[in-house]
Image (cartoon, rainbow, N blue to C red; front, side, top):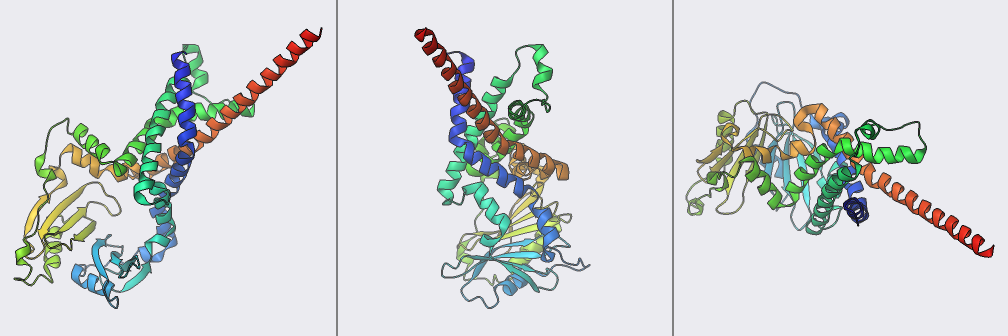
Length: 384
């Protein structure tokens, strides 16, 4: 068996194994690319009137979001931007699930309440990440399928690559005036070639969300193997202080410090770890709804003392790459142009298993037809 036949065998059968999952993951990726823009256009609660006064402190917004919800807790609070609401993720008691509460960050007025599990784009995201299976099982199935997809991209390029220079022009273009089978063949090969480089980037950034080893691999590669041990150290609060100090408003002092240290930040995420030794973690993002270029802070949850800070400018290349991961995955690292590219590449990726299956089906039928013709000729000759 020749090398190219081996590649074809691998390409074909791996396509059968992972094709359906690739189609589902790619289509949901297309839908998710513009989820912010679509939801901004559909829902008025995603915007508030910007005013020239400070945000209400986190403790006030948290109290408003939890008002009337006995037994509910909340650890995550977003300040999305000057003209956007604050969002509190509420954990309801007795396994009732979660509730996302949107509030005006200047007045504390609740503007919208939503069960995240019923939001269309959250459902799309869950399909994209887990296929609506239990997360551990679903993420593994998706992760393995994405790895197979990368192999399919590489073997596809090997199979497609033209041997002669005279074939290159034909190989880089789609013959739209050809028969439909030829057009389908070109759609599979030519579009697959043009999409490969970006598709592999999307696949690798997706894998880093599923497998820690991929995330660590990207981190180490970007750092050229150099170690940054301080980035792996996460401080803890002194749990002995729990009963000695009044910590009700510590989160407010911590947020005020983060605002002072990152005055240009447009968005803030506050995570109040409920464990005894937990900290108050605050991430200050340079741009609203963008997750690259951020400053990280850890505060003592009982005294508000700043325990650690990680300004974007002082982060290692590996940490910056990991921070950029989501924005790369959805294309928004390049703004609207990047999102359009990610959308088109995801759409092409969804089409490849379909056009590939049509090619295989056509060859299979053609093979049966040839065998039938040969059989009739042999029978005819014997009869003569």
